[in-house]
Structure formats: structure tokens, C-alpha cells
Length: 296
Length: 277
Image (cartoon, rainbow over the protein chains, first blue to last red):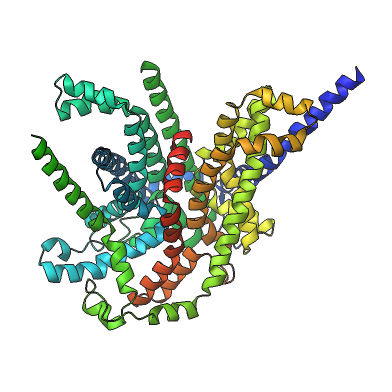
């Protein structure tokens, strides 16, 4: 009996030894900072004075009622996220369909479209800033096309398109390879059977291929959503939030308040709102996709 | 009809190759302009450089300490990666093998942080790190990645371990192996394929990460990463595009070289990571 108890204790010790390290690491990276975020969000603090001043929910009131920067950046982020999710998935599926046709150049094409994805977003932003500011001038001079003469980073509407375009350019390769993998798991005889049955390419796509791509679409939409809500790096280097503060995203707005305006308490309150928003969206998304999968 | 479809295929092939070249044209422009003088860049961005001169590279090399930056990236990524894999695989194994309330709870605690956006905690991560004296140090940053990378890694490992038959553990136990020895000599080798996936997605993430290094190690040129140095560099040379593009090319060159050699594994790993994550 003692032996049995001894074994139980040693099993518990082993369980602790195996799981404690990861718990400590995760606590330091997430849970402790998260608890601190909640605490700071209820205070007024510029980071210089020793003690944050407790002000209850005043930060949240201020954000929701009077902060136009916040509403503006929230709108920007929502518009950006919706367009990003739709466009990148449509383009990636179209490209994947072509690359799935077993062209001779498919390996090259896949690699070419994937390359920007391995590059740092900040650097991608700078390279495109150079293209928009200097490259387009030369391209405009040599082609005479009006499209190159527009101020792509200088006008609010165009700057929005530029941010969206560069983000899609950088990450489309990722979605492309997911869809190619998805298409490859569609059995060839299924595609052929549909052809024999007389289905045209459009019909075949919508009634055979698209339903079978559902798992890939789930993954891609999920990834596109999580990435686009947090968009930051590319804006920082491409437009710096400009022109006139029209391209600030929520994440960038939090960064601005916390580190540039030194509003520590206020910035963390916004950070907490972002967390709640992401949580709600994720839960909604998971329930929708769960239900769908059950039906299928 | 056959001939027609063949012609169609060739047309499609040509169109796609042209499209891919157009797609990569910005990178091509960045590279050719890194070889030009200031005057050449201002005159015409799309023209090829008149001569192949490495003057810009010499200049940037002298301003930033490239070998040191590269080493910093290497230390941060390497240390982060080893830690993530060790602490996550061992915990995920134990959690997947133990059926108890505690085990389920701890597993949830491990993976829930995937829902916390980094921007929600960036300030407090910095404050906590300052209290722990791990800021302004590449080692400190590498250690911090253990926690940031663990949730996804635990999730992926956990799913994989469930597919390994328990009999393997049992027969190893009879042979006298237990605890850490059992894990490292019997189980860990079986996790090879999934470890490769985690290595690939984590290397791409840590190597290119920006915001966390910006907060943690941007204070001194001795601790900066390649991306941070490129970022600072552009800030200082705002209109000297030829130097800026040189710095960009130098910063992304390691990634591109690695991609050219390991392309197949990288694409496979990224797909596997997305499907499992």
C-alpha cells in the first residue's frame, strides 16, 4: 500500500515537473501582463509618476464617448478586415485553381507568389513606400499612364487602398498554398465525373470544388481575420498612419496612445477593448464554423 | 479540340509567368536600386544601374554592424525556438497522457492565450520584463519567446501525441525507461515531423518579428535585430533611397537565401501548421 502511495506521489511530481515550465513561461508572457493590463486600464498614469492614479471606468467612458481617434481607427480596421478577408480569399482561390492545372511552371509560380510572405512586414512596407513615391514617378514618365500619377500615399482613400494592396501582396502566397493543398485533396475522379456528367467549368467549381474546399476556406478566413484585426507593422512603415491620421488601425492607435503620447492607463484601456472585441469575434466564428461542420 | 486546348494551356502558362514576374517586380526594383547612386535613383528608378557598384553596401555595412545584427537575430531565434520546443513538447506529452481534471484545466490555460492579441498586453509585458531585468538583452528576448510561442506549440504537439499509441510508453516503461528518459529517447523522436512544422513557423515568426523586439531590444545597436536596424536606418536616411534599399536588401537576404534552398519544406511546414493550428 505504501508502495502504491509512493507511486502516486511520484506520478504527481513528474506531472508537475513536465508542466510547470510551460506554465511559468506562459504566465510571464500572458497572464501576469494581462492582469496588469486590467489594473492599469482603471488608472490614469503617464508612466513617469511613481503611482498610477485609480479613476475607475473613466478611461472607458472617455474612449467610447469622446475619442474620435478611436472610432476612426476602429472603422478603418473593420473596413480593412472585411475587404482583406474577401479579396485575399477570392484571389487566392482563383490563383490556386490555375496552379492546380499542373502547368509546367507551377513550382516556379508557387515559389514566386510565396516569397513576399517570408519577408518582414515592416520591410515590405518600406519597399512599397519607395515604389509608390519614387518608382511610380519613373513608371508614369515612361508609360504615360495616369494610374502612376496618382498620389497613392498622399490621399486618404488611395492610402487605404495602398495599405490593403500591400498587405494582400505580402500574404497571398500563404493563402495560396493552403488552397492548393485543399484542391489536391479533392479526388481527381470527382472532378472528372462532374465533367463527364456535362457540368461546365463554372458549374463544376460551384457545385463540386467549392464545397470540398470548405475546410481550407474555414482555415483561411480564420487566419485572415485574426491577422487583419491586428494590422500594424505594414501601416507603420508604409503610411505612418497618414495622411492626416486616416490610416491608423486599432493596434496602431493603441501604440500611439501608449508609447507616443505616454497615456499608459488610457492606452491599456483601449488594449483591453481590443481583446474583448477579438474574443467575441473568435467565439462567434468558432460557433458558426462548428455548426457548419456538423451539417456537413 | 486537343490542339486548341494545348494552345490555351501555353497561353495560360505564359500569362501566369508574366504575372508572377510582375508580382515580384517591386523586389527587383529594390535590388537594382541598391546598386545605384543617389543621382541615378532620382533620375530613373526603373532603369538598370549603369555599373555594378557595391559602394552602397560598403556604406551601409560600415554604418550598421551587420555581423552583430545577424548574430543577434540568430541568438534570439535559436534560443526562442529551443525553449519553445522543449517546454511545449514535454508538457503537451504529459497533458495528453494524463486524464484528470487538472490536466484538462492546465491544457486550457496553455492554449487560451492564443486569443490574446499582443497589442493588448504589449505595455505590461514591457513593464514586467523591466522588473525581471530581461529587457535590452537578446537572451532576455529569446527567453520571452518561450511563453509567446508555447500556446500554439502545445496545441499542435497535444493533437499529435494523442495519435501515438500508449503501448509505446508502456513497453518502454517495462524496459526500465521512465520520466524524462522515456520522453527524450522514445517519444521525442516520434514527434519529428510535427517538430519540423513548429520549427518552420516559429523561425519565420521570430526572425521577422517587429513589435516585441522594438519594445525589448531597440535601445542599443548591440542588441538590435536586422529588421529593427533597417527600420532605424530608414528613419535616419529618409531621402537617401539608395541606402535605404540597400539596407532592406541586406535585411531580407538571409530569408530569401534560406527560402531558395528549403522552399519545399517551408511551404509544407506552413501548410501543416495552418491546418493543424
